[in-house]
Length: 112
View 1: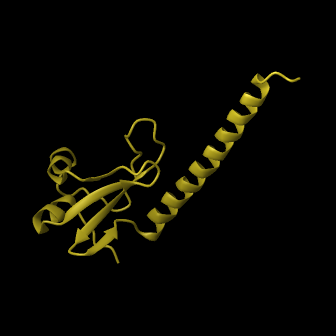
View 2 (view 1 turned 135 degrees about the vertical axis):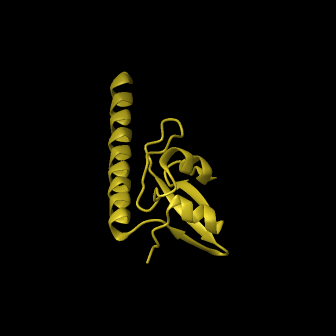
């Protein structure tokens, strides 16, 4: 069971929070103070899946809290299903793009 995990609660309890993109591997600590200043202390990170801001990456960011040696994704089953659906779409998109690139390369090579 995932607690509500508002930004204010995470700050007050001193819980380390990270973000991770499965697609490009981007991993970093989350600046909770900055989020609290912009969105407010009652803003919840549960099921938040923003798109990755790392260049041309098409992945989604997942948030994770760390309590000692335990880490927990801030996803409910609905959020995990949305993340999985996006990952499936991304996999299919990449397959289509690589096939198209191979077809373009085949068209460019002269036939002898």
